[in-house]
Length: 466
Image (tube, rainbow, N blue to C red; front, side):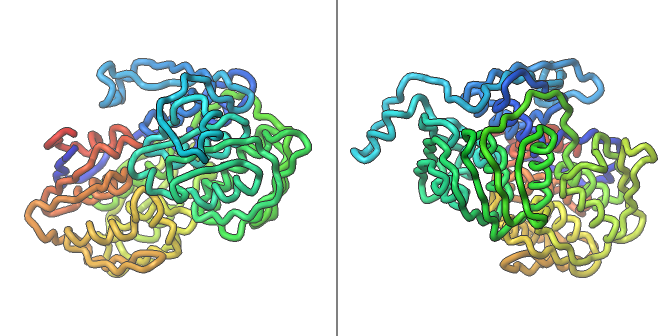
């Protein structure tokens, strides 16, 4: 889909969608639990639905409840209804549903492995979080499970995670670490080393390993850990559910005994600071005032750091007295700065376009792992910003944006290639609001991966549907 974003001042009140990270963790934990859980006000997006499909394939029963949403209808829902909750009947550990054998053929070496594959591959779509977390859960059972996904997923390597799973006695086959991936347990435990350029590798083991048989010990050495706040998020679930584990203060070493279980639960999903960055950036760029609803100031999400960045760059950022809303505005020119994004790599696209409107250089540093997301976001941001007349210097582990306070597009109607990356699309949609000319964005439909309705929020004009 191609859309056109016209320049305008962005102001108003925006209810932020639920956290993708929390939603997917809650779906997986509820599916692994014994009993019925209720996930209230979850994220209703393409990634979340990919996780629902995976959990159903593993045997969980998931019932969806919707209600009228006249105040803020979902543009993708003709009935104007919103997702209110999922009720999840857990499977007390993932157990693959048995389906008829597919007709695909394998080499002689694969026949024994294939004979134990009970059903078609699980398609995770574009959801890397679902893939990594479900890979580990699949290692808990003796049946073989195959995972696949879209073209981006097939280029994203899970090799460090698969190496660790192999070290725990789980059989893994992949395309050089990428999907399609085939997993066969059982989980035998042991000691493994797991470098984590993405924290999702470690979260996968932390969620699955407690369900190994009693007496099985999983010990994890972590020589590299990016995105530490997401591990804090995962551990908060272990603590809430009374799951036993030991961890060093720097998260470089974990010991998790088997024999635990996840409990059924009922809880709401907090709003997503990662998504909130985009309407906040839109206000900062265009000089408007936006009030964001649904965020929890005390949540462990690392991407709330974006609002500290905006303060440093000259924005007014203020929580309401009761903590129910967060308001962002700007009355002075934006200024550059240096920001370490190691814990928050998903902020790079929003931070980069905001920096394009700042006076002076903005350095986004210590974030090499932004190159292994849906796209190489460092390279893509540098290339697409150049179309808008913004000079930048690409570093192996970051990006320096040489801001001049405004954009000077090279073409009268610049066209941004969203590359099928939801955060790239949303970042440039926000950037367009402060431009001197309208900006066209290709592959814009990918915004729905995490933030359905964001383009409509910015009054995007659809030029061509997919």
